[in-house]
Amino acid sequence: MPRLAMFRSLAVRNYRLYALGQLMSNPGTWMQRIAQDWLVLQLSGGSGIALGMTTALQFLPMLLFGLWGGALVDRVDKRRMLVLTQGSMGLLAVALGVLATVGAAQVWHVYLFAFALGLITVLDNPGRQAFVPEMVDRERLSNAIALNSASFQLGRVTGPAIAGLLIAWIGSGPVFMVNGLSFGFTIVALLMIRTGELHRADPVPGGKGRIREGLRYVSGRRDLVLLLVLAACVQFFGANVQNQIALMVNNVFETGAAAFGVAAAALAVGALAGALLAARRERPRLSLVLLGSLGFGVSQVVAGAMPGYVSFVVVLVPMGIVFMTYVTTLNATFQLSVDPRMRGRVMSMFMLVFMGVAPIGAPVVGLLADAFGPRASLAAGGLVTIAVVSTLGALLARARGVGPWDLVTGRISGPEGPHVTEETEVRPESEQSGAAVGAGQTDAAVEHSVVAEAAGTAETARALEREAVVRAETATGAGEETEDGAAAGADETEEPAGAGATASPPSGDGAAPCRRPARETGARV
Image (tube, rainbow, N blue to C red; front, side, top):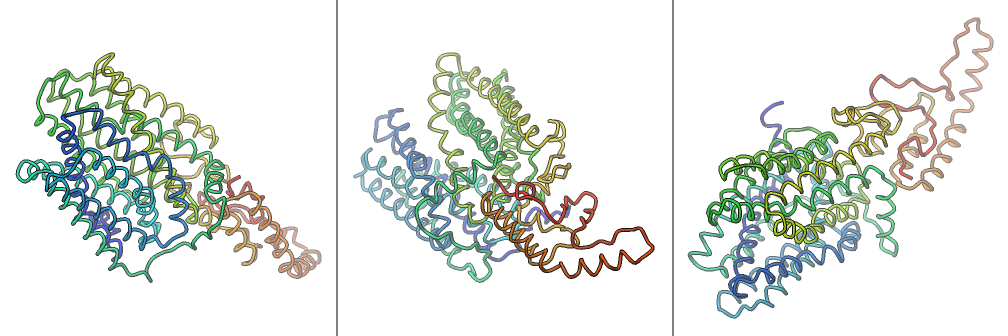
């Protein structure tokens, strides 16, 4: 693969502008995280409870209102909404920065700031996830998602270091204001985007039941349900690996804050490398989701067994690589395999699971560390991850009618039954149905079959399928009679390929007969 393939989505002007804005803004986000924690500790006299309360308040809105936020994202102009959310977060940061700088900030101010920031992310997080597919075509989508992750991890490497220097030099308050100003880069980029070049899906009309519609869509997709369970279980410990690293560095190796910074940087460097490696792949593979999460569990067990600080830090680099391989591939799989009209709601569920388990898992990690030691806590998280991934991998293989080894090596069962490659499996259903059809299916029947597959509900799919068959029979009835008459008077015994004949699909492309029930065409029930 050419070297520049790693950055192929940057060839799209709109995404290039957006990525540049994110690249400039992401370090500010990580700077603010460090400044917020430091400010809370200063104002509360080093209270761990106050620090935990701040984190909980920031994640609480996503748990309470995440599904509602996803439903709203599907109804609105995502670019305009992101301008509003990014501007609001910038104003919040500047306001808290001013309070901290003049010495008027109190702990409850930080609590209020964290909760308000969490409310905005209810819209901002699924909005940013759903906006990327509008900027790039589906061939570049996986690459764009990976580059977003790489930009975020680069900010994770540089932001805390810059924040530490600025806090020591000028205090926490100005760091908040610097982050507030950094949102301007993303806002300018969003305003410069050419709306005529966006690949927008039709907006979802308002009304009741939109959240239930999204839940029914996901519950009808067993593959998505299993992947959400996988994400929840891995994130239960994975989202708190930073806390586990801190406990290992402080309690086991008995080193200082500088050593913790080096360990955190090693994990971030590995994550950055994993994101860049993911950017080289043309399509997400389900096998990489499983292997990445399995590798993360193994690396947790290995890290917990390391005898010294240096060897522990060395293990954190591959841990970051496999974790980011799992994260970026899972994200791209969700983005590519769902109906565009459902993307906001589905991605809100994804973010709800991905972010919502962090405050739940944090106390468990702490209790395990206090009761059995940080090594046991880290190893236990890894063993649970290995067990969950192995079990869910077997269930996914069973759902597709293949062996676990076929699933891991990239051979899975597609909607038509025979083994197809994962590149075919993660395509949107409407594109899969249009790959090849029977020779006798008319254009009208093809169109309605595509719509039926993309509809996402069994009832709609069946109704449209019946209409497609009726139209096909009406349009081709005369042709069938002519061909049948010609065949009857001929000496040849070979049957002509009339409208009712089933065309043989080309080898390996997953083509299907021209007439199939809705369940077989890939419609989710």
